[in-house]
Image 1 (cartoon, each protein chain N blue to C red):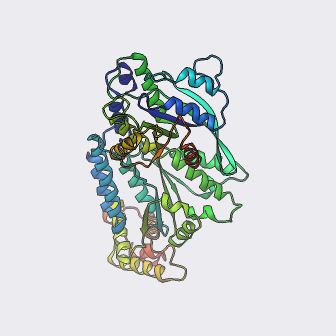
Image 2: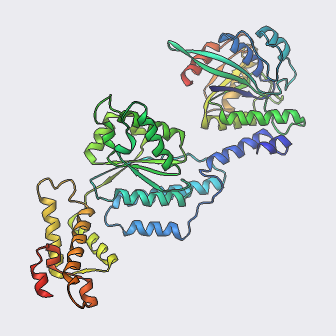
Length: 314
Length: 193
């Protein structure tokens, strides 16, 4: 562009128009793709159980990115959108899964060149002596450039008061957000209440994280649907009695003492199912021959883990 | 080091503003780009400024300190080649303009000078290229619109015209010749540096 100006092929006014157009384009040439992969991301998003609100916002973001790309093609002014986010919710409510999907959406839409997700927590960012923290944090930022830096339990950066090195990590991150505006999306994740307090303690962060997503605990029905999906993918199925038992177990975990924090989540379901799969294997491994049906079925005993009726039925 | 880039059309008064404002900020000697003996502001005015457009062919730089609160901030004031409407026939001018645009892409602060006293239709009258400068600079760096030559009687007419041309920007009336508006510009710089 500057050469065109120098050679006298365009005047300064045209040069500015071209520069602005280049600015508006969020990424260098690469046209945003809306091919099969963009659709597959949306399909995957839809296949997640529940998360209605999150899905709506993700669709909004994707639509916005697509339209921005079309506007850039028409030479319209593009406002670079701040896409840094706060994810609030208990463990196992889908935060990491959604972050990975967003990474792909950002790559498809040309917002981020790579769209990979780097997951870190306090220990990856905070150092042991003065200056160490900034160095460690910058290192993680460097790894995440072109993608998403996902900070789990981000509120823990603010614990320990003003002399804690967590402060330094926050400052370094804020600076990185400014320095790498177009190469980095930051997601801070954590428990709902803790994240709220974290933001109250760091009021400057509110405006830097315009997108705040709540990941509610799954309902019992949603958890059962997740279980069905997991089993289907792994090509297992539950006996009717086992399915009832699974529902009871989930219910018990949800209503039990201290259950509030990690019972409403998909991880609990996955752990129950994987334990049952191991017990089923143990039950069948001694048999000389097994039918296809047997290999696929998880019985009540497998799920309970008491091993009695399982052996009897074999 | 933070760069404050002075841009505008030819004959908007960029170089006089550059020298006088640098002097106002305390600069005693200017080192011309491309070598040569340092110039006092007085000599610089005599040698670098006159009525012919495009006297400034290369970026000129002056390191200054801008008082801010109790301390002061170091900054570099940069004078640039004027930007023409349309294509200039002079290759050296075109090269200078390319350098100006390049500098605009990295400057932290853009001081956009327009000639408030120019009669509409004359080459230095604010026009399309000023609108483009504003649109570009506003979006990325600190941006100040300075309406120069307000010491001349024609300026009152010109200021009205400017408000129509660039309705989105607050403008600071200055006179590079008399130093009018300098304190306000300094305050605004201090806030933005």
